[in-house]
Length: 282
Image (cartoon, rainbow, N blue to C red; front, side, top):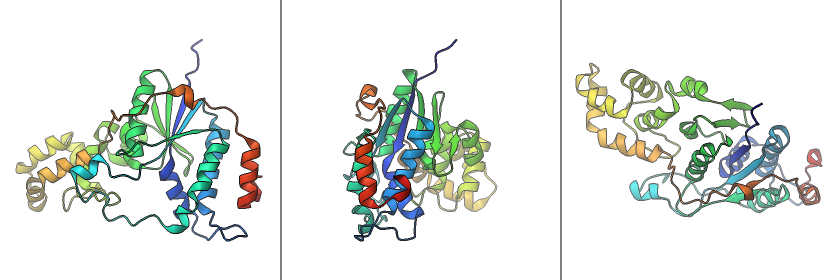
């Protein structure tokens, strides 16, 4: 009988507290007026993963506040994003206490995004024989799906593998960055090629097999404007693909023994939930 693989959950920390904040739009607060919507959503997500999925190892990964190597490549990368809302910022210490209450490890690395740390660890862990699950709702991370690496979206309670990537992008995980490079990504201010949306980018990659092949074939395309834009903005497309590509050699230490899941500190969690008045969590 083949022994069951050790499971490692890599949790997109900032992705989830932002999504929780925007998903729970009704104003939640305790009797002292402290906002609690992001903490509450984050708590529900952690509970779903830790109780329902029971991972052997788990790590929460955050973005660093410093600019990254992508800003050096493209000054306008994420330039349009507003600063963190004040009523979210005040909830972050409670999220830190929540993570501490679950006795989970959390990491970040100056100059790198959570995606890059997750990608680097996922590749290494899969090679070491772990069953890696990335907990995220970020479509960009679909490029990381590979043998031994899947995505779990707690918001949709859905596991994502190569089949779901093909349904979303019209191509396998290895071509996700090609599609994103052509279509751009407004959430990250990645420009892409003007006039090329998701539908066109999917069709081009499906027909020609990748960005370089698309750009090479542009000269012979019948659609005049598409042809002109692919030729004129070829370098912008290549830059956009680079910006959308997750780095797999980030300087992050692979130390799974530190990420081993023990039991939560129920007293700490109870104290936190009482302070925030999360009656359903008590």
